[in-house]
Amino acid sequence: MAAIKEQLAQRARLVEDFLASCLRGRDFPKRLLAAMEYSLLAGGKRLRPVLVLAWNRVLGGRDEAVLPFAAGLECIHTYSLIHDDLPAMDDDDLRRGRPSNHKAFDEATAILAGDGLLTEAFGFFCDAALERGLPAERVLRAVRLAAQAAGAAGMVGGQALDMEYTGRTGVTLPELQDMHARKTGALISVACRAGAVLAGASAADEERALDFGRAIGVAFQIVDDVLDVVADEKTLGKPVGSDIEKGKNTYPALVGLAESKRLAGEYVERALALLAPYPGEEAAFLAALARYIVERVH
Figure (cartoon, rainbow, N blue to C red):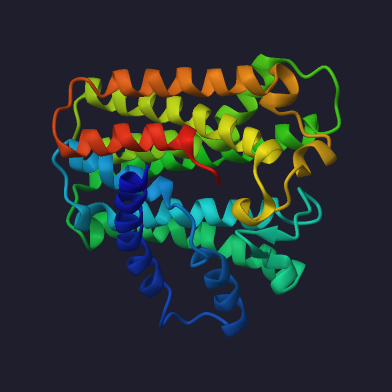
């Protein structure tokens, strides 16, 4: 697992370097910029932008061309974390081992930092065509897919269902799966699909990228639910057991730990099968990344 962690870290640094410079020198109020960068530059696996880059490479694309688009997806993901942590949502005091945005600043600033990151993301998407030379038609299609994945039919809708289901008994497994497919899976899926679209992929390649993203998105969420039960707080970077305490519906709560782990492994195997048509280093990286998702400890 050490090898894939190092590869993931190397690719994440490419995204980190871009993110560290992309907001500097902009005419933003200083406190707002500080809050945006506080969360955007807080580290993390950078899974979504790395998936954009990886699928784009698999299908013959160039990192330089799609990096702004990849960064835009990370901005959307970061805004969602800031808003999820707010008292009106999940009310979490810690994120990645340090105070959540509204604790480090204040609630109003945290809301505006999230709003700012979400809006800036679409500027980065456009830069893929305007500054990096990608065909405008490809970029426009990828932007539409990203908007659908992030919006009310996707991530935002999933968060709404999460709030609706919290504390509610009788939530079924299909309901839980639908909620997580929206809240977590949609942005992971669109990262893979957008990478393919921006590379000019065929319909078959695009579909495989989408299905790969869906499979690892489910596995990722199941493992997150499991880690909330079995991990330690220092490694996880946030309180362990918070899902149970808040009355969240999770895979372990519905089907137990053993079955949750089995399901995560099953979805990873589905993802690996989708990589069969793609020989080479990039597909091998994606396969190792899929396996890492079920083996990680945070």
